[in-house]
Image 1 (tube, rainbow, N blue to C red):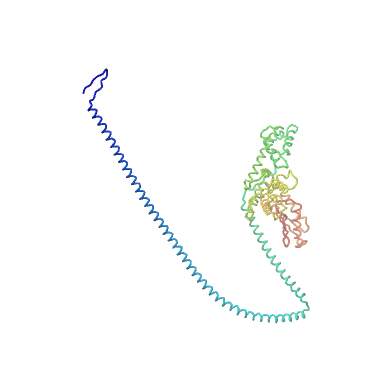
Image 2: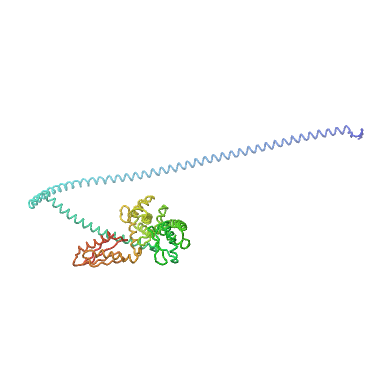
Length: 532
């Protein structure tokens, strides 16, 4: 090998054999590479054919399995269907056999019934023959009896001398008289028994209701007095030339009585609410010490607002106490005014609450609605809150007031008729009237001053002694009963009974009293009447 340099670079120079050798090596390498590639392609093709063959075989195997499964399922369904068909067929056969047996039994029963019917037919025919014979015999006897009765009737007519119509009339009259007497005695006996039962039952109901209602009973004073620290305060109340007392009476609408009684000033007014406002106003003025016309008006206005709020609160408390809801606020305000109203020294608001409880308990005992009865009892005297301002008695005023505020008919009529106009179609009115009488006439409910009490007792005794034949009269039981001793010489039993009745009527016409007064006239016999 030789190398030659030309210029700056020198390239190696190969000989021809070397080049040939390199060319042959390259050709052999290319041929070998081509052969290897061909061989690898052939191997891949063989592998792909093997894989395809395996996939085909697997698919054919799976298809065969599915075909076998499908054939097996078809055979199972065919077998199940055949089994069900066999079962239904067997059931149908059993039903047919059962029906055949039932038909056979029915056939036997029908045959038996046919035999029984033949026997009964024969028995009926025999009975008809015997019945015909008996009917012929009965007709023959009836004809004979008719002839005998006709002969007897003719004999009776000839003996008594009465026609058939007259005899029948006399017989019917006697029978009617006998039946009317017997019916009257039965009616009287039942009425007496019913009256005894009703009286006993009503007494038990009233006693139970009164015993169940237990509450503290208070009586309010009817006199409004104001205590003053000294008599010098009277001059300050009167003011210079009487301007303070004139302003006070003009603003409050009451009269102020200042006399020689030490330490007391009396407030007099027809309206109990105005009287209470005036009393509290005067107390505040005395406590404040500043008494002049402008201060009087200022204290009066403030006290009026306080009293109005107090009245509304009292009305709401009364409704809550007896569990009566949904009452109009104006009606509750009028109800609260009853706190300042008294009747025979009995606080009317407490009396209304007591009547509400008693009415509710009585209603529940006799099977009526206790809520309606309590509402009617609470509002029955609502007219007394306005009877000083309107004309008419408190029942009518109260009924009009409740009607204007959309109360129920039962509630309105209970307020209107709890004293006089009691109608049985409204049972709640009667219950309220009963509860009102119980509340007003119980001992301790109403009190009087000693002078008024003595005067009332003397009035009772003097009225009774004014009747001829009365020797003595004694008022007992706080004026709720009068014992009269009649002369046995001047009166007999009938006159004594008339005296008893006349005395009761005189009390009703001449006196005003709560509850009732029982009059007892004592002679050889006793007679009682009740003045209601």
